[in-house]
Image (tube, rainbow, N blue to C red; front, side, top):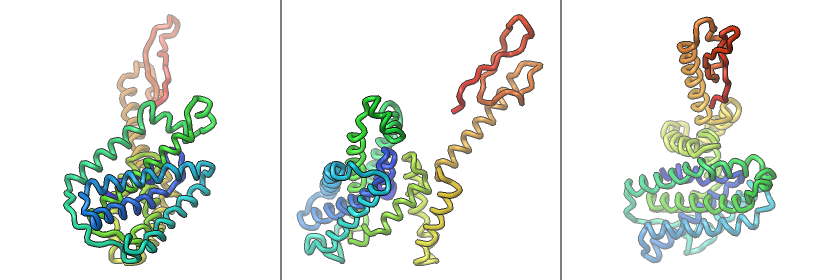
Length: 310
């Protein structure tokens, strides 16, 4: 569940059209804030996680202003630099961050019910953002910024929101992970975490929250299966990502969507074959069409009204 929230911190800005990996750095900020507040100030765990989430989100706002002129690969590299900066600060943070060994002993009581409720709320909110007027705004802003500006959609504001939400999700995931593992260390926010995040959303599917959640489930389960190959897991991950990028660019969600469309099309073709009037070859009718027999007074041929099949 923590992995799902973390994956959403990377998938959500991509959906907004922002090529950002800042969620990894936010993950570290949330984790260290939670650990410091609990171990140094005896702060209640849920309050500590909430403060870590708010801090990561707040840092996302000035970062959006700072990087608003960048896009594509340059923006991605800038956010990776932010992640590495957080890691360096963690290593050199002295007693505050525990240095290279990190902070231990975050002994708190976070139940499975807490995780389920928090994850369900986060996933539901992200899912809602993909539908309705808000979802269409985000889609237009991502696909065609110039058209968005012409329609009155403020693309820079949408991108700032993407940074803030990504920071909040990353901080929340970091805080929850610290609470569950009782520790946070610089190695937890290393470059390997960036690779894991990319792997999860590429394999699951970039375009929807479903892909992030599916990818998180797969790569939470996969390390156990691949435990026997030890350090070669990284190579296997790389091969999986390469194979998906080449043959399954839509990820697991894309494959599932294609299969559902084919099944619906086949069912629709069967319905048309059953309902087609006598004298009409069902195979000549587009499965994405509605068939309505009419009498035009000439040759009694049916009129085929087409519409888009979705």
